[in-house]
Image (cartoon, rainbow, N blue to C red):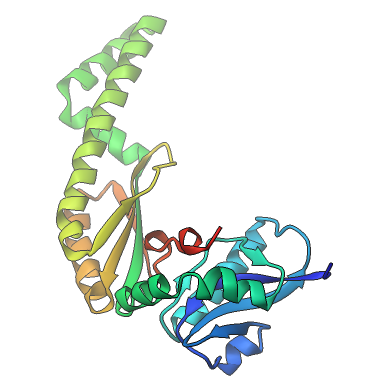
Length: 243
C-alpha cells in the first residue's frame, strides 16, 4: 500500500499548468482535454482544520484566476493517478465538459447581511407602538410575565422585519443572477446568507444594485459581499464521480 495519496482540488480543461501553481506543489492528472488539479499528501485522513480549508480555497481560487474550474468539495482523495482518471475524468467526461462550458463565463458572489443589534432595536421601539408600550410597562413594573411579553413581541417584530428585508434583497438582486442558493442564517441577528451565480461581466451590476438596497435598509443592516469566486455552491462534482 502506498504511503501517499492524491488530493483533488477540482477539474479544468487545460493540459498545462501555470508555474505559480506548480511551484505550490500542484500537478495535473490529464485524460484527453480534461485534467484534475491534485497534490500529493501523506496517506492519512485530511483534517478539516481552518488552515487546510483555507489552503484548499486558496488553490481553487488561484486556479479560477487562470481558467475555468469545477471545484471539488474539501477532502476528496484518491490513491493514485489511474484512479483519478478512471473514477473522475473518464467516467464522467461528457458531464464535466458540459459543466465546464456552462461555467466558462460565470462566477459566484456570496452575500451575508446582519443587523446592528442596538440600532435595529431602537428602530423597532420607535416604529412599533406595541413594543414601546410593553417596554415602558416592563420598566415601570418589572416582572417575569412583562419581560416574556416584551421579549416575544420584539422577537416577532424582528422576525417580520427580517422576512421583509430578506425578500427585498432577493427581489433586487435575484434578477441579476443565473441562480441563487440560500444558506442557513447562523448569526442571531443575521438577515440573509446567499450565493449568487452570475455572469462575470455582471458583477459590477450586482455591486451597484446592492449599494442601492443597502441605502434603503441601512442602518442597521450590514452587508458583506465576497467575490467573484469559483462556483462552489453551484457545482457538485462528487455526484459525477463514479461509485
